Image (tube, rainbow, N blue to C red):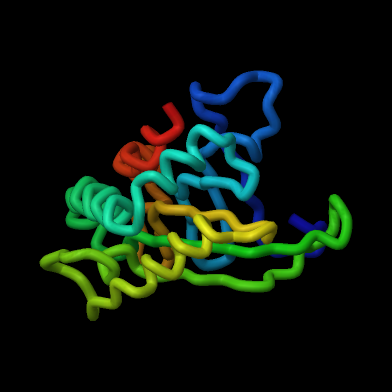
Length: 185
């Protein structure tokens, strides 16, 4: 993140990471604190290790859709308890002019995960978005492209963020994305 940004983020490494690995070689839990929302995402970075990348590719588009369906089903209790929260997919292609500079965003695909799978409470269905996000990762051809799945908690619709138990909401969002994390094992 560049120094002029108006948000902060950090990450938690997972037990699957080797202590000598760069955090960008393994999936990790990302927390973003933005002016209007909190992001709790599982990030699969551009340079993720070969084993996880191979597992993602081996799933195929159909298997990735099933994985996404499981995450959406897992998230349902959290979303019922916090109706202002939104399950999200985000795919981002970046270019970094220098290590500490603000990156250029070359491409961004972001959508409500429920639109990509059969879900009773889905907004309008559009499974092609998931196909585009997944296939862009599988066929990234040298681009710096990462994917994330998780939950957005907008301050306006999630007033419980100001309560002491807010960290539990964030932790549950990460835990319910376990099917994606399991690909790292």
